Length: 377
Ligand SMILES: [Zn+2]
Image (cartoon, rainbow, N blue to C red; front, side, top):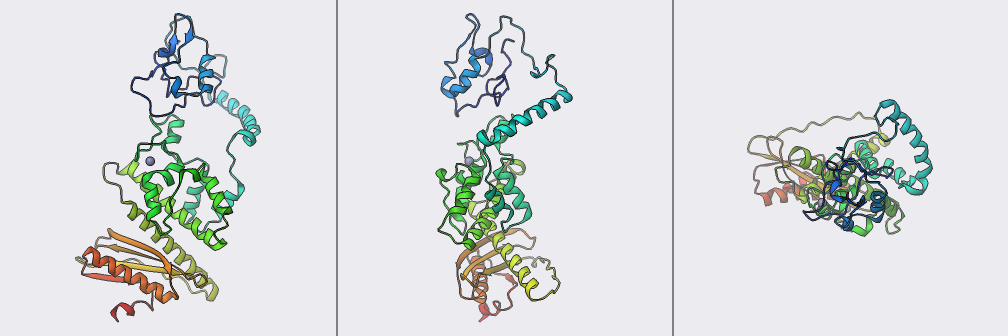
């Protein structure tokens, strides 16, 4: 084994060492060694780590120094280190996994990151869509395919975030700390400013929120719902940009925030109306199909949700053209005294937005029976 073809930073070449490869601090200078042979002093049979010492931990250095350097100059080859003949087979892989599974169970309590059961409880009881609950559960368990996780599993060349190109793309970075995500949060109706010190991990953030005494139970529930929809919107935008449409400009943070706010409003309205129907009668749901406006006309859809206990009100507006393309949208969080006032505010927001955008032929669509006469009056 001469080390001429083993990449120091991406190949698994450290035996008996978890994870088997080096975790370097980034960025590194251009002329940093890339193959293992560059670290070998073959004349003295020792390792020369001086060129990479600044980028690796002392634990990494110890793992390298523990590897004996061969006298031969045979070319590198891939081996399976867990069998005598060094060959891989599914059968021995199975034995290996079963053997290590027991060790992992023992190690988990002391060394692995354990998710607090309250975090899982909060996610599964969150007022949101089932697909978003699954998304959140995957997020806190580290199962989302971010570049940091891809890099850890050697599925990409770099863990760096493709948008800011400054930090490894962890799930906390993607959903909160990346400047793009932070702008979405601030543009949303809760105007949240994520701070790096609040995000040691996503699940601890959720746990801290649970313990925060500033909010009452209802407010905590609403914040978690908003967190769920906004995180989902940020992640969907990120995936679209990475996989489908990487050459075009990403949607503005304001638009992403607006769509997330709108989703929250629609969801809360849907849940509220469903609860009311269940409470008062068993009238079957009449499905309402969105109909395109005529050519040359835009349609404004607006809605509002009002909580009669706190007077908290959320409204949302979207404007689409005759093809159904979204032209603009906006959402607000405010206080109002009645559902009529809330619905009227939503309609006025839609008309104001259309006016600002210069749309003159408009159709207003709302599910409010009481709010519509107001603008004409
Ligand atoms: Zn970033």
